[in-house]
Length: 488
Image 1 (cartoon, rainbow, N blue to C red):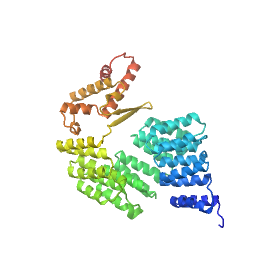
Image 2: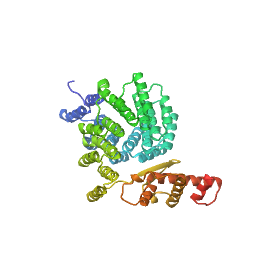
Image 3: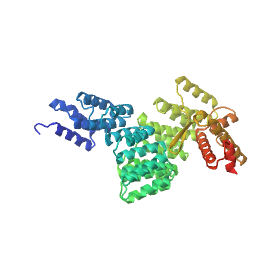
Image 4: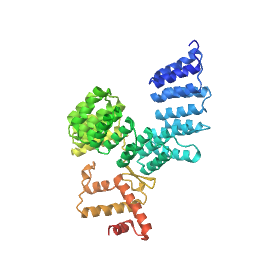
């Protein structure tokens, strides 16, 4: 072309993006001014999309500045692209700032901001935005938005919200969509409803690798390793090629089912048979698998042989640290914790797990030394957290914090009553050895008694008793009195 214009430049950039070469698109964008060609709104949307694919926040901000210089900061397409870019670059605050600045929003821009929050582990905000979308607009959600909302429900374990969204999916006719079906399979599995996952999956007429992978990963995480491997074989029999995430599920299944030989065989087949190069997440599954079967030296050897970046190796060495602590291998736990601390990854978890490893070995001097070092360095561990969902409301609890419970004192009374009944039937507190502080047994029992999971269950019992009181008009009796009534 003798004089390519902005349309041809933009088309060429879009072509490079479509063929997986977003860096070339950015290079072309930088060359445009040299040829006296000025970008338009479609050019900016295309370039922002390239930054989004690369998660290149630095370049994305520079492009955003040029968007404002050219006066396109109110353009619907450009703003939606910017929201998507900031979301994928983990800058949700900037994404929301762009969203707030828009004078007009459509379903695409709403989908972008809802997805941005869902992708950045802020599921509550994602669901709240979805409610605002339904209240404030007459637009109908598309399958991309519904998939993001389902993913938010999955990350929060919000089964009720997930079911409500599933009903909306069916009403809108999106239940046959691969992306939505895969999100539903994943959501139900993460909420502990593997039966629903299977039902959703089996309704897909021609499942691709995406729903198969969701089902394989879901069953693997649920502890159904053999079923996960059967699904993998079924997928191969149907001529569907696996991807790298599929193999994460397969290796996870082998790990949870102690199928070491099968796991190593699948690892070797990744590149030889499918041309997929194993990375840190696959080797993490192998380390976990070997650790679960007590092959710590072999797991340590593999961890040392893998060259990974600090952010990629955090999960690998963190897994090795946890499994070595579990098997009492203080030597390997020490090496793993050193790697994590030196690479500034999972520092608090590394210190605490190492301290626990020393505690299991009875080396209390080392425990006190690590705790002192944590205090001196300003490193603190976040308290354990559990939550339950009752009638679409989430109750959150922190270990040892009775004040985080509604009617906390009554919950503690109920838990003690349950503990007493359990002991009468022969229960022996087997978890005292997992309290990694050098205190008396009574104090250890008190610590375990205020575990976040127990507080959550106690509150569930407390609310259940209130419902019984109301249903049977038992009057203002205490929680324990009503509980005794139920036992009778």
